[in-house]
Amino acid sequence: MTISLSSPAFAQWKWKDQSGRVQYSDLPPPQSVKEADILQRPSGSARKAAPAFAPGSAQAAAAALGASAAASAAASGPAKAVEPELEAKRRKAAEEETAKRRAEEEKQNAARADNCMRAKAQLRALDDGMRMARVNAKGEREILDDKGRAEESKRARDIVSSDCK
Image (cartoon, rainbow, N blue to C red; front, side, top):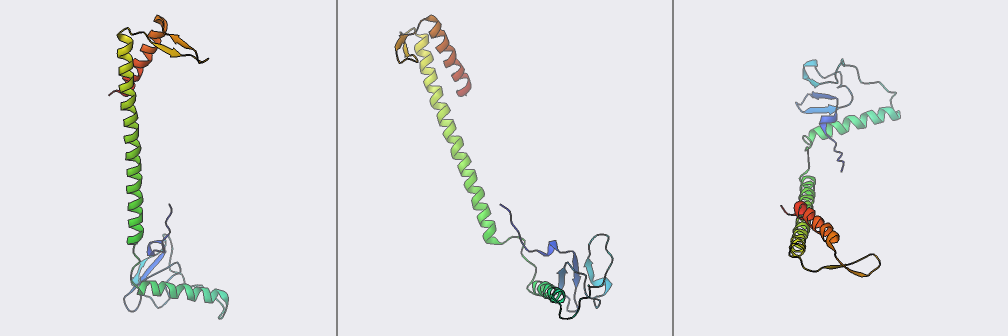
């Protein structure tokens, strides 16, 4: 999830205006602002005059709109870094993800415990020497001989060693 917020932290210029309010802009401050009132400037940048546009041009209107937006943002106070609703949604999503992960781990642990119990029971039956049968690939029932019993015993021991902890 990507979050895009308008924030003064993304502006390049920061200065105090005549009324003492902090202003943010990607354009240099007006010439009326004293050098001492400039709080932040782009790295390696000297103060440049705001670009001059022909009066009534689209560029002049855009520059005026940008300056008024910066002034109104500064007048309304500093932008909040993170809105409470957004933070609550983010926290809820993280909690849901944690609960989902925990539920999946519990499900896997229950499956391991079941496999462990079944493998131990199979191993006891094999070790007791009980007569056992299995169904082969053709669907026929066959009685386990010593070789088959050893294979099943090894498989059950492997399951016990991996799933029983």
